[in-house]
Length: 618
Image 1 (cartoon, rainbow, N blue to C red):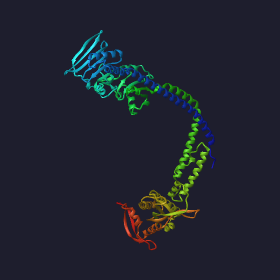
Image 2: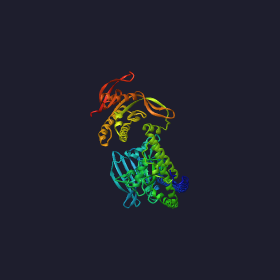
Image 3: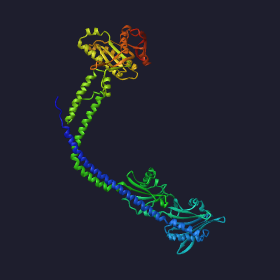
Image 4: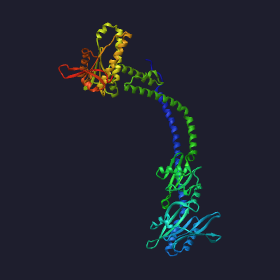
């Protein structure tokens, strides 16, 4: 055998080591990339936190006067300086509050009698003007009067009957339900400019605790949207202010209301806001930064001390944040890749070829472990590596030896030894099996009358066909005795329904013999008329012989009685006989004809014998 050809594996491994060093260099570049991304992430988090902090502080600053104005009104009332029953005094006080807090939209008093006294900023075609308002439920009547300041003179602009009762409004009921201290009401649409607004409401009670009414400060949130429009996040990023339900309190483009209601983020026409809100809901409103689709977002609640249950939501396309850095890293990666390309190509070719060669050898060894010897020889596909070719030659020699070994002993036994990894030892066990004994009738006469070369060819074809049928039915040929075949089911590998399997194999063998007899004259072969006996019973199965050399064989009742049944075919003029035990296991799968009851050799137990006529229903 010629010496293996190819490169030394040491040389290849050296090349691989060099390649790995180059890959480490590439890893450093990747580490730089991910470090840059981490730095950008940190910058994004800081930026989002800063925007949220500034927005919440700006909104809180916008609303902070509400508490002070309401508390001052309560103090004036408690001190007796302001009589809530004096409508003119209340309206005058509300006007002073609006003059001091121009960003307030309303300041009002509502009492238990159903009276509402307020001052508000009212939009007109000429601009925003100051109004005072009085809605009264008294003496069985109800009216609505509003005065507007024009050129320093108050003019009555509305004087009408009405049925407005502040006690039925949600803000009044929320305030009346509290014993003390104010609370923010959920945003709702103000009719003045059809913008979202929010109300701070606080109850006013007598020293005895009886409710006199509620003070309110009302704000339209347009100023919040105006402030959001000044914030810049990347090129197209935006900052939004939402309440807990997703109602849009502030939008950088003022898209807060439509169709007479506050827009909700879930179905907002701004796709960036809608998708960010849905992603936030999926996170169960967990605060902090998160990514979704191609966007980055950050959600931050207003500070708890503000008492305002709103969220600042910042959204920006990821490309705008990471784009420039990604481009820079990409350029660096391209330069690094070009420098490494030549070395990596060489290392990759060697490593892949080595890997394929090793994998091919591994696959072939795995097939051998499963006693699958059908694959082509490894020598037919030589490798560029000397050591791999040497392994292939050793593998092919081992496979040839196993193929020869497999022809001497039952294939199932070899598979069992190969897969189990155990060493074959002398020993046996008693096991219930089904034994098939097959013999050619008048074989001695055929030997004398047939030329040797034709007899050998005919017998080889006969044995090959019989062996194939036995294996197809999961049986094992335990022994060839001249022209006789001893096959077993249930050993060495356990087989379910071994009696049925053996009987089916016997029926197929009889049909095959008939076919071979019809072809015998054309080939010049002798006619092999075959008799078969099948017996199910206990046997000793295992390795019998000396420690240095032994055979896997079967001994005992089933083996002896199967041979006896085969011989009884001559007496009855039949071809296939089975015992009573086998017939019970066959069930209704075959047509059986009772022959007679016989006794085992030596005067033992008696059992019935049956002829198998064929498949059931045939």
